[in-house]
Image (cartoon, rainbow, N blue to C red; front, side):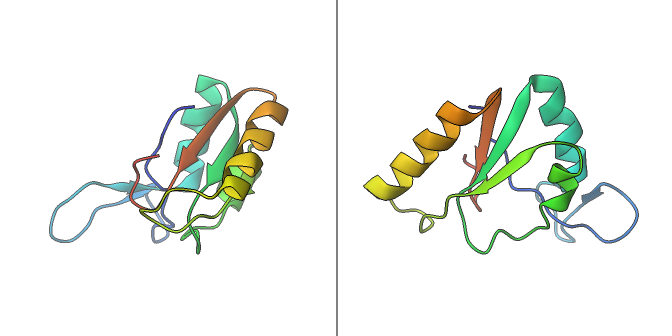
Amino acid sequence: LPPMPPPADPPAGPDFSAPPHGGPRRFSPSFYADALLQLGVTDVVRLHSPPGYDARGLTRRGLVVHDVFTPEDELPSEKVLRRFLAVAHAARGLVALHCRGGRG
């Protein structure tokens, strides 16, 4: 289960955007897709709503995206845990997950 920072939909052009006042770069979903596929990831779990990016950059490359929403900075409910475990057990490979804060 590799944690990952959340992707961002940068303006047309590069696969990343840099905040104007410093901070970490935000990479596009398609940038992450290539790296995740190389690691053997088949599924991505998004834990926050709204997700903040278009999942098609991941799904076009064959990754399966699951929205298993839980409130940010709260422990997940039993229902959320069961849903996540079902996704993890059904996955054909590794499962990457992320929340809005990027702590996975």
